[in-house]
Each structure stands twice: as structure tokens, then as C-alpha cells.
Length: 522
Ligand code: ME8
Image (tube, rainbow, N blue to C red; front, side, top):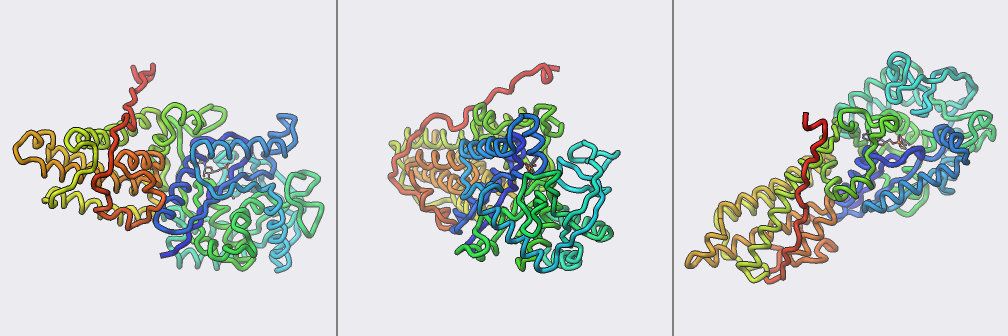
């Protein structure tokens, strides 16, 4: 098993506030980084902002500001948002950072020197939203399918990366590494894109004349041009870990995984491996591609005002609950629909009724029947053995699902333990047994079993719900447990300390009433 894990999010454009979509990707990367750290790996998590290109100039012109002012404003907004909601990144990279500009120039020079770049005339349809030339499959009724805006016809002399030369190698690589691009549907999509692009020659325009766009990184071999924003942006994944000669660069790159939305599949699955190959680097280990979130059945868009701000969600529901919903309700790779009702139902069912209820019932009874400390158990009976088996099973299941980037299944697995423990309590009925003569040992065994199941659930939940997990551990008398927790050892049955002082506390997740809107009354 690799002892290093390197995870990235896309670097977000600095032309809009962080919304639900950015939040999902970033929360997922954060959860993966935390999981791998829990599994004892040294994990590095990179996120940041993509600051060059025409979009930023458009916003700057609207606001009568410089592009640098716009970039500073939004880069800070993203960083402050992630800080406010507890995202634990290792570096927030900006493409205007000096080290990044230097790395981009050195990569450009290396690719140029190796003969992969040629100067030529080009005419095509350019979408500023995508910041790239479109092909027929990107268009519907003459409009870009992602941005619903008409692309501009552009003809100019530019530098081209001769990417098409590498398509046969890339196709073979994808065939030979079936889990490079996952889930599978996106691998198939890339293979068909590669066929189509081959027919078009596979040249990628990587420059913009300064006469049209001067907000970018200058080409080291022609001062009249700046670098195309995607070529610049993708390289952040190298700069962020100290390319070319940082101490850990080689080890981290060998463990690299990207998380991206399906909208940017092509740059990541085609441009990027070809760029890497041109400088002698392997593709990342995995490209994890997720689907799109819609909101109340509609595409997220500024004009509809349905962006769903992570800070507003934190204010209204608590960020942990929102984070849980995002990870649990999207099936990785497939589109999902956010509705406030589904969020509330999910919080009530899983967090309030299931997990929260188990914590408060168990600790209530520990207080009433065991003097407020984890009791000494008797030997486990059949029902206890079932819980122990479930606890052992989920540790393996969660590991498998997290390594395949299926957080929704990992959560399902952890909640199967929470659920089983609630049912176990119903069957053991310690509140009745406590009144029976000689029922003492049975009650102690039941409550010990609940506390230990809670401890293991909390350890396993900690990458997903870090604050909640820490709080549960405090309540069962194990503060600081997460500091040294390592899987699988920390989730092994029997780790709880008999005699530890427990504390019932307030409900972890109070139930939320569904808001009756005019819509839902109908
Ligand atoms: O594309 N559902 O930046 P960007 C799910 N700068 N995820 C969504 C989403 C939605 N509705 N909308 C956005 C760029 N995302 C480039 C990236 S990387 C070298 C350069 C998420 O600000 C998702 O991760 O447009 C998507 O891929 C990303 O935001 C696009 O962010």
C-alpha cells in the first residue's frame, strides 16, 4: 500500500463566488485527504485559483478594476470560504504566484525545445466561458452546450502544441490502465473524444497574442504572446508540489490523483497526459470525475441566482450536515439534484434520528445505569458478536470504497454499523433488563457494546464529519483520540477504555422542520 497520497481539486476561476459545485469537489478532496491520513499515509491536498485568461478581463472591464484586483478579490474569497468551513488544504496555489509563473515558463521552454510546439495560422470557434476552441460535439444549435453562449470565430497566428502525435500512445495507455479515468463512463467518453480529435489533427493552440490578451504568462520564446490559460492552469498540479526538484516531488507525483467535474474532462484526460509526456512525466495515478449538481432541477447559474453559497448553508444547517449531504447524496460520477427538502430529509433521517439518537440514547443510559462511565462488559453473546462482525466488516469496506472514490458507499457502510447498533439496543432493551434481578452484567455489556460501536463509527466518520466525530469521542470519554488514530488499528474492537467518563450533551443534530413553502402546499 502506498504511503503517500496527493490529491487536487481543479483550481477555480476567479470570476464568481464559490458555489455548491465547487464546494462538493473541495469537500470530497478534503475527505479523501483526511481518509488517507487516517490510514497512515502522508497526504498532500492542493487547491487554489485559476487567475489568467479572458474571463477575468471581462469581469475587470465590467467593474473598472485591474485583472489583478479581480483575481485578488476572488482568490481571497475562495480561500477564506474554505478556511471558514474547515477545509484542510496543504497549499492554496494561485496561478499568479511567482513560483508557478516560473514553472510554466520552464515547461513551455522544455516542450518547445523538444520540438512539440509549432507556429501556425488557425481559424476556429472560441468559447470564452470554456476558454478553449470548440469542436462540433461542444455545440448545440450553434451555442456552447456548457455556457449557452455563441462562440466567436477567431483567426490568428499562434503557437500550437502538437498533441495529436501522442494520441495513439494515450489511447493505449488508457486501455492498459482501466482505472486511470474513473468511473468507467468517462473513460469511454475520452476514448471516443480521442478518436474524434485524431480526425481533426489534435493540435492545441497554446498562445494568445498580447495585442488581444495581455493578462497571462509570457511565452519564454516569444514576448509578443502569453500562454493559453489551460496550459498554464494544468501545470499548477506540478508547481504545487515543488516541480522540478522539490524534495518530495517524485514521490508525490507518483501518488497523484485529481478530482474534477465532468465539464473539464477533456483538458484533464487529453491535454494534460500529453503535456506531461512531452516533459517526460507519467500521467497522474487516477483522474476521478464526478457528475454535475443541479439545484431544484435546474442548472446552477448566476442568472438564476441558484448558486447555493457554502457559507449560507453553514449558517442555516451547519457545515457538517451540509458536507454529509453532499457526500452521501451524490453517487460518484452521476449527476445529482440538490433540493432543500432532500437536504433536510437526509439530515433528519441519518444524522438526527440515526447517529444523533444512538449517541443520546446510549449516553443517557450509561449515565442512568452505569454511573456515567464506560462499563466493564461481560463475555459477548450472539448479538454482540454480530455488532463486532459488522464493525470489522465496515473497516475493510470503507477502505475499498474510499480507494475507489465512492464516498457515498463508504458512508452507507459506516451507517450500517450505526443502524445495526440502534437495532441491537432495541433487541437488548437494557432499560427493561436493568429492572430485572441479575440483569446488571447484561446491561453493562450492552452499554459497553454501544460505546465501542460509537467509538469505531466516530473514527471511521472522522474524514467525512471531522467535528462531529471529535465531539462523539469527547462524549464517550476519548478526547484527542483522533490525534493518533490510524487505521485499521484504531478501529479494532476493544479499543475503548473501561471507566472513561462519558457526557450526554445536547442533541448532536436537532431535527429540522421542513419549511412549508407555497410550492409544497400545493
Ligand atoms: O473549470 N456540479 O474552473 P471553474 C458539480 N479553472 N461540480 C461543479 C459544478 C456543478 N454544477 N459547477 C462547478 C475551471 N463545479 C478551471 C479549472 S483546473 C487546472 C482548471 C466544480 O471555476 C467542478 O469541480 O469553472 C468543476 O470541474 C469545477 O467546479 C469548475 O470550476
